[in-house]
Length: 72
Image 1: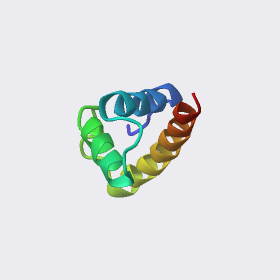
Image 2: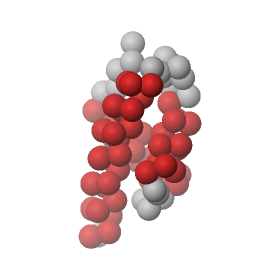
Image 3: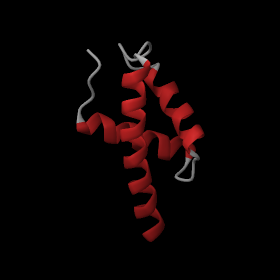
């Protein structure tokens, strides 16, 4: 029920980068992601533990993308 594919995870990170930029603080990143979660069926009331797991994973991907964009 609360599952995202790798492609969906990468898409969420791309959306945040495109909409909010690649220099967000962790707090602002989490806020942006939580807003996106509300538009995903089943994720609008994601348990906190699972939400934190996703946010940690997504943050790591976001940071890697951010570093790659700076090199370009």
